[in-house]
Length: 174
Image (cartoon, rainbow, N blue to C red; front, side, top):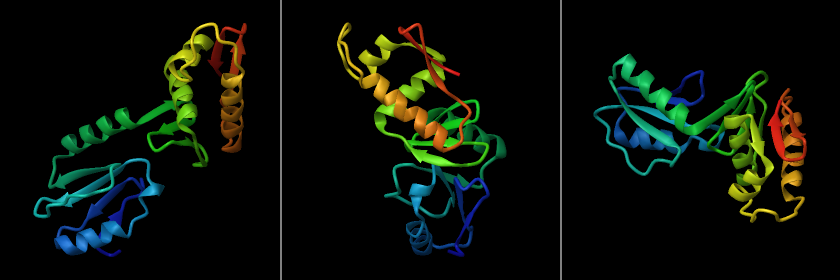
C-alpha cells in the first residue's frame, strides 16, 4: 500500500511517480472501491493501465492544476446530485455531508430523489410514469411506500430534509 497515497477526499488515489506498472496494478487491486463514490486515479504518464473498476477515472500527471480542476468538476456534475446537506452519489449512496453518514439507496429511490433534488416540487403522476412506469390514472400506493422508505433512510443518516405531499397531487422536498 506504500505505492499509492489516498488523499483526504478519499476519492483521489495518487500513484507515486517511481512506481512500475506491476506494483501499480497490485496496489490498485488492494483497494476496496466500494468505499468510494467516484475514484480518480492519478497515474504517472509512463504507466499504461487498463481493466480498471468502472467507477474509476484515469488521469495522467503531470497535469496543469486548472485542467485537473475541470476534470473534477466534470465528474462531480456527472455523478452527484445535492440538496442542502444531502449528497446523492452515482454509487447508489446517500450521504449526509454534515456527519458523513451513508446509506444505500435502491435504484427507484435514487430516481425519485434525483427528480426531487432537481425540481424541489414534482407531480406525483410524473413520478408514477417516469420512475415507476405506471400509466396515468392507475391507483397505487407504491409511490407512497417508496417515499416512506426514503424518509426513513434520510432520518437514519440524520438528514434534516423531509419529503411532504402537497395537496395530494404534488410532492415537495423540504
